[in-house]
Structure formats: structure tokens, C-alpha cells
Image (cartoon, rainbow, N blue to C red):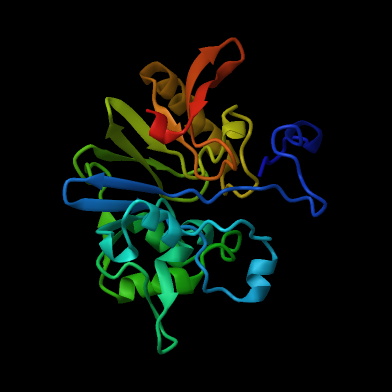
Length: 261
């Protein structure tokens, strides 16, 4: 998760357990706007076999269904599922088994949003990412007829714009959402946690780590200049933060829960 940063350094940020694994979240974001209920990413899902899940030591009792219910919604209420990218921990909840044992969209009334470049990248995967792009998570979306592609210059919904990044994986999308006079940026895997704010802290999962660094540097300056709220998908504790310029570069300024805005 920290690439070439030595463990003696990153261990202080997110300590590893006896399996040399760290705790990470799969935090989604629900956006209610007019008659739209937009879900950004949907986690790992529950349809993989025991061998698959054994690699990841999933723990805790949080589920997407429980989280939606707490807000008075169900999966059937979702009008749009926005997928930042198609790695299994971001889109695995898109597809579920039906009563007959077949695969179907878990959000039957939703449009699923990806982009053409990333869809091609995911459905014709390179050797490096093949294990992250699982066809059972991806192909049934298109087969259902519920898939749509974004365009590079479009505001997808009012107050919901997209920034494209290519260092982690080709065509990853970061939603930029206007909320209470602030711009909230869903960071996906560009900056998966608070600990990844320093530019050299990039994941070994990134297909082009140097490009990730090139993308982070101007984005972080922009975030500091415009007081963006960064929403972390994978940080185990911190939901959001703002950043500011320091003598060491851009660093976290304040961190908080989104509901505190």
C-alpha cells in the first residue's frame, strides 16, 4: 500500500498485523441530489468464494445494505452507480447472485457509469491487473443494458464533475461534488488514505507510479488553493480532510467526518 516507502516509516502510519497486513476501509459515498440517488463505488461484494475472501481477512460487521438502511434507503432506490474504476474492491458489489444462481445487477433500477477507455482497459486486462479485474464483476453490467459511459468534458449531474487520472489504472475517475459551498473530491485510489498525501507515498498497485506522482503534485496544490475536502475511500479511521501548503509540501490541515460540514 505504500510502494517503496520503507516499512520502518509507514508502520507508524498504519501498523501491520502478524500477517503483515494493514486495516483498510472500503468506504462508499451516497449523493442525494434532486430525484437522483448516486452511489459512488460499492465495495468488494459478497459473491466470491471462501478461498478468495481468505486472502483479505475481512472483518467488522458493516455492510452496504446496513448503511443504506440507516439512511432510509435500499439498493432498489439507487438511480446511479458511479464506478471510479473496476478493481474488485471498488465494484464487486455491483453484481450479485439471483435465486436461480445466475448473476444480475445488485442495483436493478440504476444506471452504472464507467468510461469507454477504462472499460476497454478492464475487459482486455494487462497481466499486472488481471487479478483485479474480475469478469463476473464487470461483464454482467454491460449485459444488463444498464451501463453508460461518461465523456471527458461532461458534468455528469448538476454539481457533479469528474477528474480523470491514469497513474493507478487507465481512466480512473474522481468525482468532484459541490456540497454546502465546498468541493468534495472522492479520492478513490489516487490518495486512498490520509497517510498517502505526501507525493512519494504511492501504492505498489499503481500501474504507473511515476505518473501517479505527477498527477498528485498539481492536484494537491489545487486542493490546498481551493480548500477542497478530500474524501478517503480506504482510510480505516479518517473520512475527510482539508490540506494546506507547508514547508514540506502539501499536508493535511484538518480531518473530520463528512456530516460535520
